[in-house]
Structure formats: structure tokens, C-alpha cells
Amino acid sequence: MRTRISGGWVVGHHAGRHRLDAGHEVVFEGDNILYVGPKFEGPVDREIGAKDKLVSPGFIDTHVHSGHRASHRLITDAGRGDYFGQPFFEISVPKEGTRIHGDVRYLRPDETGMEAELELHALFTVAELLRNGVTTFVEYGSQLRIQEALMTQCLALGVRGYLGPGYDSGRWVGDEQGRLKRVVNEENGRREFTGALKWIERHDGAGAGLIKGILVPRELETCSLDLLRMTREKADEMKLPIATHAAYSIIEFYEVVREHRKTPIEILADLDMLRPTLNIGHGNLPADSVRLNYPGAQDLKLMGAAGVSISHCPINIVRRARVLDNWQRYTELGINIALGSDTYPRDMMLNMRTASYHGKVMSHNYKAATAADVFSAATLGGAKSLGRDDLGRLAAGARADILLIDLSGRGTLRMGPVRDPIKTVVECGVGDDVDTVIVAGEIRMQNGRIAGLDIDALRQRAQEAGERVWGNWHTSDPLGRTHDEMCPLSFCPASYRDGVIE
Ligand SMILES: [Zn+2]
Image (tube, rainbow, N blue to C red):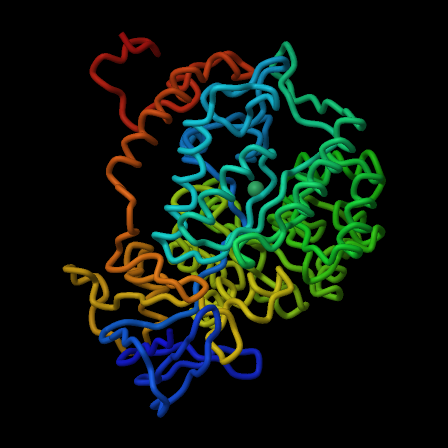
């Protein structure tokens, strides 16, 4: 069936860049864009009107930690000084020998009876992404059963997922005094790596290409050099993209320097891993960062020379008083900036806005990190990190992943008068403004509604799941704190006396 979208603003594409035209048309058939331009002369079977809408390529979220993120909701305005403001440590380092109750990402591989939790975890993730106009996402290294559940929901709701069980040679835990401790298990890492390869071989290309494989050695400091080397070899052989956390934490940076006498980025360069299809999360603490006081830094130059990609997750890092330092320098050196949500909410418009405003401040240049730059990062930047020139753009021959973004403000005055819809979306938009989502030529959301999905019921299930995570927090917290001790409510309730809720 051939479909024409007409009557709105269109983000087209030419020679590697977006273009913006009022009144252009987009015609697609199946998972293939046939035409983008002024009036299409051929016959069509279906018309979609785009009056007061921006017709845009689907967003690409390059850094998703799946689930309802109940534990992440404990990190804002709270935390431990000895974790140096790293949210990853704050919420996912359990006391040694325990695990975070209620979060299925930490299930033991042999644990049974958690199907409903796994289903909720995956459905919430994929539905939230779809509601916000994300048509392709990268899951950042959850274990195998999470990937299975995500694949089921990607196929059911029709969203492109880059999936693959994560692996590492060790994890961070809290010792008996609550101190950070790195537990190494090389054999386990190899086993997980083999499992990841098998999973990818089996599922890569499933759902007519909706599901694609990605190699995710979880963090640089928790992976041995051997494991990273094997990752690079398999990525070359199987032509897979890679994602890993590196240059993302002060502790990680100095652990790696202490162990190898090299920076995390220098290690990746030595292993010949720096490339456009290496997605570095978050790459905001390279040796060049003033926060690290490291002499002779060359990380950003190495990254730029290789055209490496970073998944920049502005909302997540700014909650820890972190920023990318700085947007202009990264891009001038040749680093490909892609955007990711990482945390909640999975709203690419809020992420674009945050990236733009902090990009301007940190570049000391209000002409940096423009609306066009951050919009390109959320689309073309993500596509580049995946080695895809058929995603993130509306052009003949590209995949039919298309958004209609409502520029009316949906019953509010938030948008105001619209002159430049890209700036309107970046400055005034929220994810809820996405009206229609088409993935692989199929309408997956229309008028903000996903067929067959009860959003209220899903949110209620997530609320109950969140309360289970918070209620059990003390059983895995390295200091034995309750959730109220770790992260007090913004204002004390009347029943709060001497640090205890009565
Ligand atoms: Zn992450």
C-alpha cells in the first residue's frame, strides 16, 4: 500500500544533512520511502494529513537502560560523596551477596516465576519509547532474559531494537563496610560473551529487520582487555556495532589509569575499537576534562580522529551536576554526538533541549549546540553510531520510520506562534507532542494512542512495581539504608520525626 503524507512541514534530507520545507510530501510503500519533495504526481492508496504538524524522521535513542527505572528515581538530590556523583554506582551497586529486589534486571539466570515482572519491564520500556517518537533504540547491556522480553515487545509494538545480552568480567559491589569493591570473574565474562554471540546469531534480523544485534561489554573498567579484544574481533567478523560505558565516571577513569597506566580512551584506541560504530556512553569524562586533572590529555583528539560516537544523555548527567565539556569542541574534533535517554523520562525533546542549553553554556557560545545540531544528533547521529545510512532521515530509499509531531500545543499555549518548527520542538516541545509514529511503514501510534495498549493500567502496574523496589531497598543497599534514608522526600511529611517515618 502506497501512502502519502502531505500538508505539513517536512524534514527532508540531502547530502548528509536535513532540510526543512513547508508543504513538501512524503510517500512510502511498505518499509521504503519512495519520495520526499514537492507534489507527488503518481497514484497513492492512502492519505495522511499533516496540517499543523512536523513530519520528521523517527528518533534514535542510543542509550536505554530498560525498565520503569524505579531505582533511578532515588538518585536526584541525594547520594554518597565517596561515589563521586555517579548515578550508576548509587543505584546498582548492591551489598555483596545481595541483589536489588524487585528489579528484574538483577534476576539470577536460573530464577523462575518472574514472567509477569519481565513482561512489565519490557512493555513499559518499549511503550514509553514509542509514545515519545523513538523508532529505534539501543539497549545498554541488560541480561539475556531482559533482551528476550524486549524482543517480544519490539515485535508486538513494532519498534526497532538493537539488542544483545550485556557481558563483563566483574561487577561492582559494596563490601561489609559499604565500600566499593570490584569483583572479577573472568570465566563468567567469557561465558556471558559466548551467550551474547549465540543470542545475536539467532535473532539478528528478526521481525523483517526490526531486531538487530549489538555487542555490549558493559563498562570499560569491568571488562578485561581479553574480553574487549574478543569483542572487537567479533564486531569486525560479524559487522556489529558496539556499545560500552567509558570515560563516564571519575572512579572508572582512575581505576583504569591505576591498572593499565592508560586512560579508558587510550585503551580503546590500543585495541583498535575507536570507530563510528562504537557507541561510548557517555564519553563526558575523557582525560581532557578539567575535573580529572590529568596531564597531557589526548583522549578527545583520539576520539575525533576515529570519528567515534558518544551516546550523550544530558538529562541523566545534569542531575549529577555533570555536563558535556563541550559540544562545540567535540564536534569540531570530529566526534559523532548521538543522544540517549538513559534514565527517565524517555523524552527525546527534553533531552534535545537540555543538550542544546548546556551545550551553549559549556561552549561559551550561544551559536553552538543549535536546535539543528541537537535534532541531527537525535536522528542522524544515532544512525551513524549504528552504521545505518537508511535510518534517521526522510529520503527515497531510506526506511519508513516517520513521526508526525503536533505543533499545536495540544490544547495549551506552550508552542506559541510557529516560525521554525525545529526550534519550536527543541524549545517548547515535550515527548507527548508526538502524534503519529510509523515504523517500517506501519502506523504504530496514532493521535497519541498505541493500539491495544491501556496506558493508565500500565502506569499503575509500574507504580506497584516501583513501590516493591523502594520497599525492599534496605536489603541490598551497601549501607543498609531504607529508601527514605537514602533519598528523603523533598519535604518532610508531618509524620517524620528524628529521621524516622512514624
Ligand atoms: Zn548507561
